[in-house]
Length: 128
Figure 1 (spheres, rainbow, N blue to C red):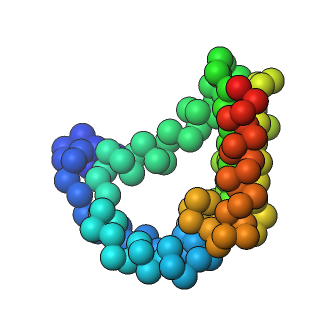
Figure 2: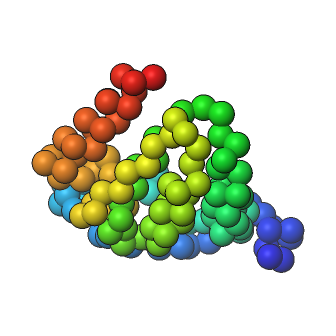
């Protein structure tokens, strides 16, 4: 990518489908008011997002620490297939769990779904 070489930190608008990040209306409203949700991206970050996942998957069998991969199977922002693939490559001692009806931001799901997600996280932490 030419932009990563010439102007790697120059940001430009990259509107995110904010309404597709959570099923919780309160979380969506909060995101709209969050000044850190600026909707900009640099060529360097775009290049990393485009290639970084492949590198992580390629090296997943070398992970030497416990990993908990939680992801939204019904993600409306990114294709979940990378998370599915990563989950199949994780070594023993690592776990992957897909949430079939969750959206992109798992920790901003409605309370009934969030309780299950947080319990999974707590159980994993307690197992360490």
